[in-house]
Each structure stands twice: as structure tokens, then as C-alpha cells.
Length: 79
Image (cartoon, rainbow, N blue to C red):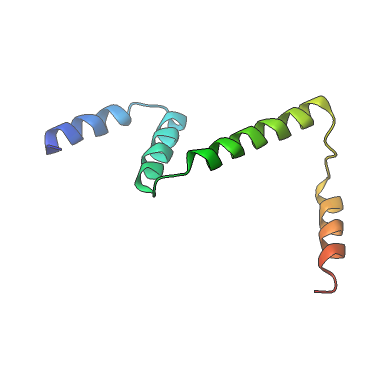
């Protein structure tokens, strides 16, 4: 890409909001990674949506920080 074009893109990107720049940066960095298995990514997307729906409907049991810490201590106490 020509240096001029890159500078134009950079100038336009800097006009975006912080959130928009963060999203763009995430997408650009992700594009540098190895190709993802779309089936795995799709499965995680479905799982996340499922968990959100459980929380929203009140079906998920949520733990506060102290309760979580107690459970983890008990689980790994003898290891």
C-alpha cells in the first residue's frame, strides 16, 4: 500500500471514537492470527448467547466473589 494511502486511512481512523478504534484494532489484530475454525467460533457464540439467556431469565445461579473463592479453595484444597 502506498504511504499516502496509509496516511489517509490513519487520519480517518483517528477521527473515530475510542470504542470504534478499539473495535477496529481488535479486528485488525485478529486478521493477523491464523485462520480460525468457524465451527468452533460459532459454537462459542452459541454458548455465550445461551449463558446470557440463562442469566437474563434467572435460571443461572450467580456467585458473589466470596462464595466463588470459597468454592475454589474447597475444590483445590488438597492439591
